[in-house]
Length: 455
Ligand SMILES: [Fe+2]
Ligand SMILES: [Fe+2]
Image 1 (cartoon, rainbow, N blue to C red):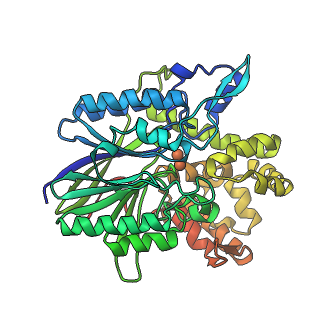
Image 2 (cartoon, rainbow, N blue to C red):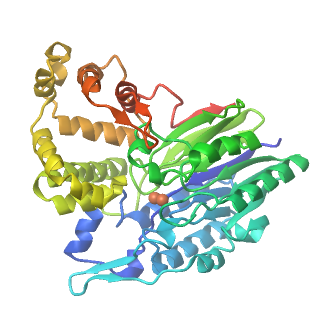
Image 3 (tube, rainbow, N blue to C red):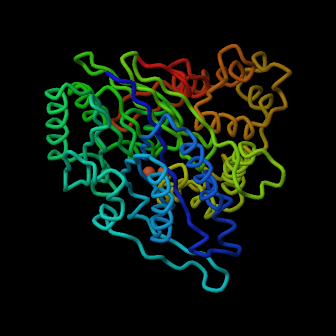
């Protein structure tokens, strides 16, 4: 197999405000309370695309959905111009679109008119709009789903799988698409080609807590579909949606491995995308971060700026759960929280929030009779700060609290006690080991989420 280089970007969530014209208080709040950098999205995309153009040895760019913030026609139009520029500079771009490109409510915010709704493209219109970015090169297309297959090089094919499903309760592959995938894999084998896939929703959990709290955000039926793909012979799937930067795998009952390369949202901290070299040695994956953007960062480094933005959002969640529950519900959507469920548990969550906002590691350890596990170095650390760290680390694929750290020892001593009273169950009612779940959330002892050669 000849070496093949490509980039993988996902969840651009571009909000083309230079054309939309949002402004005022509601827009400022909307921008502040999102994991992604909404206002800065265009500048971040421009910076990444500029770097990609400068890399003359790599012509292929994969973008796996959620191209726009919420499907604004203006954002799709402006993005197409940026993609045309990539193309004019010799790049071959392959996209899929996803629910944020047509299904959400596209909004404009102004003080004068409040929130107004913007026009969106239908899925059929998106297929036509992005024809030059994948579809025109397709060697096969599954018309019902807008999935397609392309020949990336003489001996490598790519399945661009659209997993929109019913857009809401089920984002996955219906049977006709599963049969089509099987045909494509068999065709590729007959032609002596390697084949891998990109899709939007995660086919493997990107963090152990993710399917527990956001089962609906996984690829619909992934428990059955992912082993099916593995047994067909698909070894690598590049996806997004979670905004978590992670690499993980499953092994089917027949012993076939499928690796998921889940890339974080380009426009949310850590502003990351991937550069990949696929060869006989395997899939060599490297993480690249956006280095600078054309934006007034008030003298800050762009990564510090994006991190601060994310942290502000998480802290706002804790503050609002205590003081402004409606705001909390709005914010929690960013973590796939469901509004109605959250309303039902409002009194409990408000109490928990009030309590959590005042806690330090030492106080919490004392409460659980675990003071001997709380080292002086972490005694004054606020629990909210610690949770912030854990969430940011999880999203950025840098779960750094190893069993040797003071934070791990103190926190896990509490979890150990809690696990005796809290009985967690997964979506199917199976028992979940809380200790194992939290240990893996604090520390990734699996595959390096950033840079790895998968053989
Ligand atoms: Fe997304
Ligand atoms: Fe998504």
